[in-house]
Image 1 (tube, helix red, strand yellow):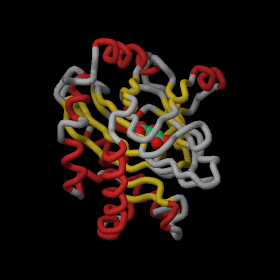
Image 2 (spheres, helix red, strand yellow):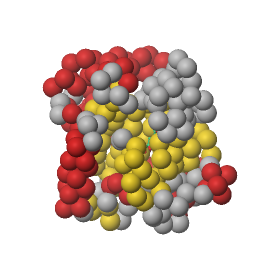
Image 3 (cartoon, helix red, strand yellow):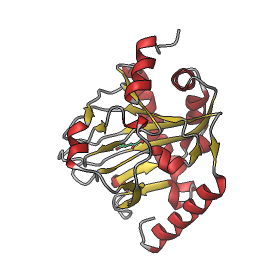
Image 4 (cartoon, protein in one colour):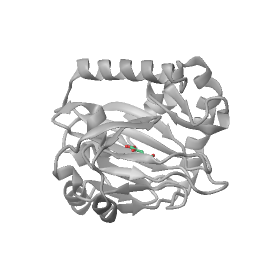
Length: 252
Ligand SMILES: O=C(O)CCC(=O)C(=O)O
C-alpha cells in the first residue's frame, strides 16, 4: 500500500513538501552508506571530473556531491526504478514519472558550504515544471550541520529570479531573497532513514555545516512527470557553459 495518504498528498499539494519519518530502516540506511562508499572507491575514479565535486579538490575527504549515480551503477539504478521510491513519486505528482537523477549530497564538518536558496525547477527547465526531489537523510541532520529549510507554499507563487550563486554544485540562487523569506522558512531536522520530498517549484536552502566532527550525508533523487517537456537545447547549453566555467576556475 502506498504510504501516500490523502492527508500527505494534500500537504504536498498545498505546502510543496512532505516528510516521511523512518522511511528506511537502520539496515537499509547502512546498506546505502556502504554502497555510497563502494561508489566513491570504485566508480568515481572512472568518471569525468564534473561528476564529483569537492569543497577542496586536493582533499578527497571534502567530497560534497556526486551526480547521476543511477547512470553509472546498477545498485543506484535499481533504487531509482524500484518499488521503494518511484511509486511515491507517481503518487505525489499524480502522473507517470521518469527517473532523472540520483545524487549524493554531503556537507563535510566545518567547511560544508551553505546551499543557496533556489527552486529546482530553475535548473530542470521543464514545461510545465512538474517534478520532485526526494532527500533521504543518511545520518542525523539538524540546524547545526545544515538541515534543509523549506518555504511552505512557495511552489504556488511562481519562479523567483535566479542568478549566479558562486556555490559549487548549486550554481544558481534566488537573487531577491529577503529577511521575510528567512522568517517563513521551515527547518526540517531529520534522522537517518527519514525521507523528505519537495516539489520542483518549492523554495529551499540549507545553512553550512557548523559542527566540528559531523558530516551531513544525504541522497537526492529526482523524478520528472512524463507530462513535462525538457527544453533540451537550454539544458545542454547551460551544462556546457557551467563545465567550462568550473574548469577554468580550477574547481573541477
Ligand atoms: O542537500 C542540500 O543542502 C540541498 C539539496 C537540494 O537543494 C535539493 O535536493 O534540491
